[in-house]
Length: 113
Length: 114
Image 1: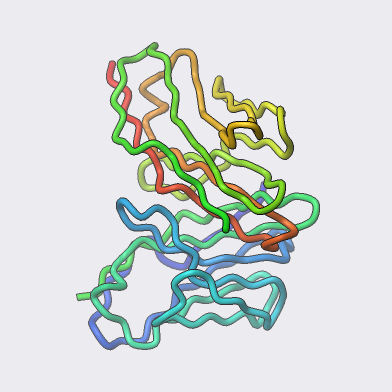
Image 2: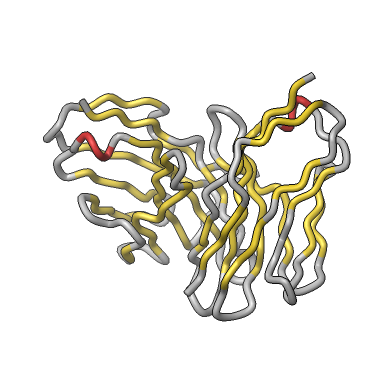
């Protein structure tokens, strides 16, 4: 079974802190994704990556950056956390051709106070 | 552009009732279509998928048929159980036009009462 793990289930940070969210997948997937999930807005794509050291902006990249130094690990970085970044963050991975199914981690509930 | 529209919730049903959650899409190419389910406190899991027109995806008693003429992929189940209570997301992948990117609907919350 594909497994996607995220470093924390719950995280509380203060405004202005630098925050790292880690995601690891164990199936040698090429593609990895970071979403945020908010009530009434569904899932919104923040960043994605097709390969090591490659990254692409999604729909809402402002205030975030990412790092992919190894194929299995994709990190989301909040450079200076703000209260409007309080959300559920979901990581996903996919193999790509020919199977585009995305496999999700359990999510990190981040609260910025 | 690509987008997915699904019926708003929340939906509350009694056990053994029939379920339909509507989903329509807009895509520039020939997308693959997916239904994901999110149980409380968990991430999303794939429920079913269809990769071309007229395909029917099915799993755990749920079904959805890819209708190109109506650009729809409605989720149905004949008899829901309390354990089906979750949030359901319709999604599309429009490879190769948009790489491996997915487009998700806003989710429909389902509560099944005994």
